[in-house]
Length: 114
Image (tube, rainbow, N blue to C red):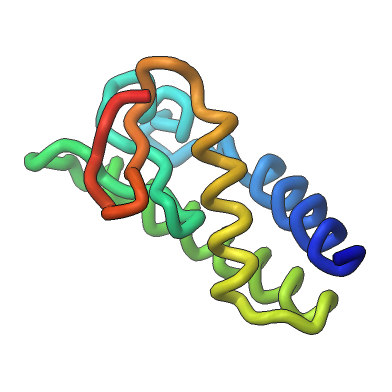
């Protein structure tokens, strides 16, 4: 139980620290969320919400998800757990932390406004 709590705290801290990288086009995660272009997925990653996405949004999502994956792998290794377990914990926390009106996925992976 103690390891799980440590994994949760570390994963959340790492992901929170990665939340605002800006691309060359000036689009960051918070702005993309505000435009309803990007949302938090239940698996701990961000996803594109809109059907017709732009190259800068796609690049932002890819960059953030790559960094999150690296952070989740580190947390899993440090805590002797699986990346999947860390992803689930992080996804739950990130969705709980999402602001009202932001897009998130539910347990079935369906996009909905929080």
